[in-house]
Image (cartoon, rainbow, N blue to C red; front, side, top):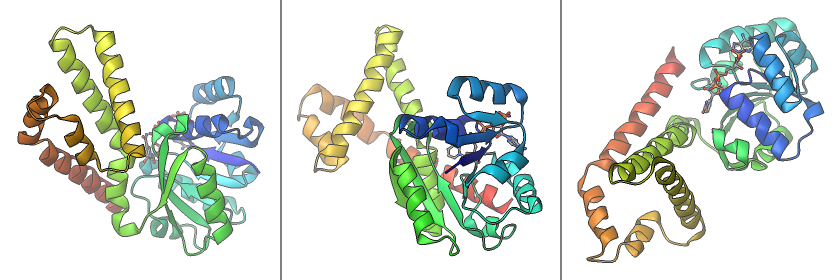
Length: 265
Ligand SMILES: NC(=O)c1ccc[n+]([C@@H]2O[C@H](COP(=O)([O-])OP(=O)(O)OC[C@H]3O[C@@H](n4cnc5c(N)ncnc54)[C@H](OP(=O)(O)O)[C@@H]3O)[C@@H](O)[C@H]2O)c1
């Protein structure tokens, strides 16, 4: 089965790397991008077939992944409609492009809308899914299984797709910002830059893993670590009395709002 990608930048590239890491054969992946330089780079670094020829990917792929920016989606969907190829599973990850919006150009196609995140390149991703009514159960299961090999998958209702996207799709950027903030704070207190970054990254990674495996909530875990009168409690006091949670609410609200705006544009 051939997987074809139209667009293979930050996200498409992460998925391809995740697929290769999960054991998917490079001979069965093809991609089309805008610039010949990027096509050459994909071919030389990942060993996949890469072109600047969308028509070829549209014709040859058994499963068609759309990994272009939302602004390019109208043009790409028109190219697919004009190609005259028979309907085949089409998997889109474009922000703001609901199944219903894609169906207006490609009615009756088995459409999968998904929202991945870049950690799936390392098998630690989160991928959200929404399916068209015309998408048969075996196709739904097949696509979800493919992404289970790169992390966690969730089928999500349209009404919460934007907020879930804000959390897991954009979330890595927020976490990087937090890590950067922790590292810089330690640097300001005299820690070497490299060491501060390494400690911040590993602390977030280890704490997240523990939170995933413990049977208690993150709030309870925080309480467990902060012994009353201890140094962690002193730091937690600052965090709790600051407006961090309010800022996070506003961050997710702004992200979800922007997703809605893109959807309506
Ligand atoms: N980045 C994320 O973390 C993330 C997370 C979730 C969802 N997404 C979604 O993923 C999609 C892609 O985002 P991205 O961050 O990967 O963008 P990106 O890095 O800019 O990649 C876009 C890709 O599309 C290609 N492209 C542009 N116009 C094209 C055309 N007419 N025909 C064929 N290929 C074309 C580009 O080729 P060149 O490289 O040659 O220009 C590039 O490979 C977006 O819809 C976004 O909403 C992204």
